[in-house]
Length: 462
Image 1: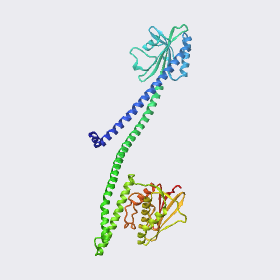
Image 2: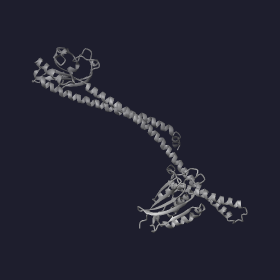
Image 3: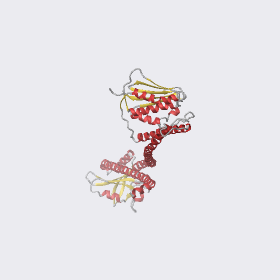
Image 4: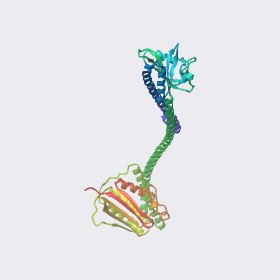
């Protein structure tokens, strides 16, 4: 429990530390992986060059072993071989000479007849079987004092050196073949691979760092989203509890006001008092409607709004609502009518009580926002759907005002709606109810012309 509290308290610090560790660790792993790949690539090139050197050495030995006693002939063959292959820096034939090795033929004419002493030649000469010794990383700095490699070297030279005994036709060792093979192939390939890998590495690290920063931001957003969701849930629970708690005293207030208005407790002599009580009753009805809207919003958002679709006959429901809302329409001198179709309408799939709630809300809105003219309700079958249209000659809306109309707490705000009371929840609740009945709702409106709302419901199967 203490650990959990500590984590919650220091969440931002731990998040920052975690992000820094990732930013360091992931690029470090990428660097290690890239270096390993380059080294393996370099080793593979070295092995390939080693194999090539051995194969070439055996071929040269076979080519010149019959001419070991003819130095001029050997020299010509060496020169031809050097011209054919640019990868060989030097090809030389050495023969034993009083503990040293004398150059009898070479692609580097300057060293012919020179006597050289180098431990590597001695090792190759003493090989028990026909073969050779190949190694790399030879340079002037690596040559032991008092010993000399074939040819001249600088400290920066790096090459493969092959030394292979040549036997005559009787199987006797007679000469030593030495080849100096440039390691530039390996160095250049490694350098190119290294440069390319470094570029890719830097790009990858940059992308990873950007990704990690984005991930940290997303983490922040996820935490923020969770907090908002928790607060939203708390808000819904509060609204639900508060609305339920408000309904009981509000019902009592409304009941007592009605009793007073009906003069159950005695005759009201003062006409102004009578008007005040009637206004109080209207206010409680508005408050009751607001509480009901808030409860419906809470139920819908928590998935607790019960909608039970069944086969419903639509016309009686519409007639009932028209009759119910005729009084407020007549008070505003508006014509409210239902244009009944010639043919009987088929049954629809809907929740009768919820459908009544939606239609009362929509027709009520038309009465509320219509100053003069009429509200007309029509029904018809269209593409296997039953359409209910509620058209009025009210104040209408512009295209911009219609964009957010079905959202919570959204109302058209202008001089004509300023005195009209509303919460901005009715259309949102209506839309949710219609969609829960697997229906659809549309709205078309023109400013100062009127509004038409269309509801489409599924027909009940026979």
